[in-house]
Length: 282
Image 1: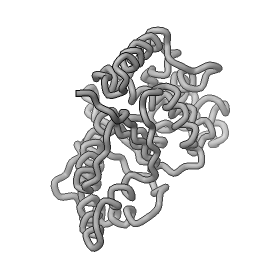
Image 2 (image 1 turned 45 degrees about the vertical axis):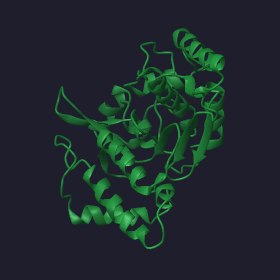
Image 3 (image 1 turned 180 degrees about the horizontal axis):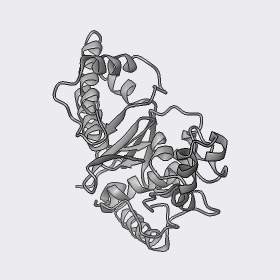
Image 4 (image 1 turned 60 degrees about the vertical axis):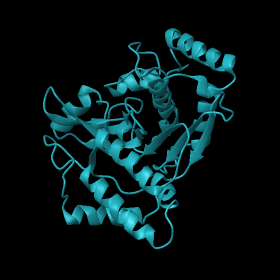
């Protein structure tokens, strides 16, 4: 049976940074996926709490705080997901839920567990979203890597929902080796910084442009199941160094490689042929 309503992409701004220009990001998404309705939201947790009635909001936040605390990484080489997180950690998360974003950063969260937590929280709220959900957050995400049994910071986690971290843009891709050498030698911070264009910093004015590539990766994750590209000039490139991120996202004409442009064109052509974005098969 034909579906009459268009597919939707819900993008939450939980980072609340002046460097994140949401109108520009929505416009980019609309240009990339014209069959979709791009829906902009403010903070994810405020949205979810809005689905809870009256006196139930406090109990809802208590439950959310416990789940977020359980997603924290206690030590770089240890797994997250504690069954009984420390009361002080839960209390901190609870207090943060009563604050408007941007919320303080400093904790590292297991990215995949936090992704599951967000899905559970949305379900607890009773609010239903059609289509895909993407949360832009300032919280730091990480994954436990098999090769060294340690957590490594990540820019993004692709799942349901997808999470993209503005702090991860700064902390996850490695800076130039000279930066770490200078810092290890105790040189002045100015000498350890490197050139102004070498890497992104907190509230960097280039943040919005860089985020476009990670939104594109989230779309390809949903469309074809693979968010990344091996072409270092493509916005879908999985950058491990700041220089790679800058090359893929902040060059003169950043965009998709030829292969992924053709792939997206075929997907959109299929959508147009059936007259509905929901004809797109993942």
